[in-house]
Length: 176
Image (cartoon, rainbow, N blue to C red; front, side, top):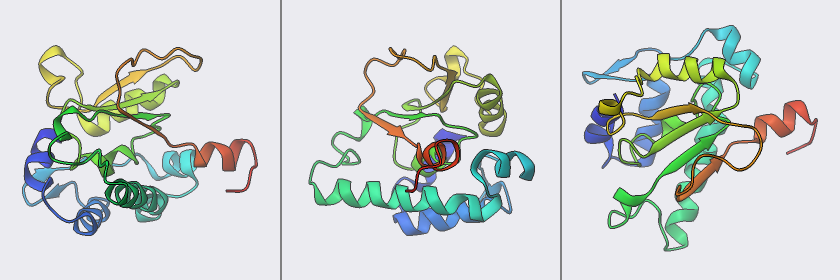
């Protein structure tokens, strides 16, 4: 799935890509390409406080901000020259809503989702069709359970995406 999405959409504009992801809420097949699904509405609401297109608003803003900062710092992790080397880890990936945004930017086999909850990883694997077999590692997003305490098993990830807004807002009752 990731390989097909990357091949088809890696060169399109970020806003156009975001619009395609919002369309994927309604249909998992777009232009003949399968997109990851979404869990049951109750799971989405229980995990992030919203569902469907509404659940993509926060990650959309974060994705566009990461891309904007990357361009203006002139050290773009998305630069075509270093593109193949960039790895991204979505730590605390939940059901994978944030990682979807980077499927057009990061080479297949270099996107990682990690969570401490086995249920989240099982859900991601089912939504993204990731078998995590040896033959699948170069074509898919790798989802894996991680220990909540250091060290992580990921030693050479260039970009770690810590998506903690939900955690801080919901669990720690901190304003963002």
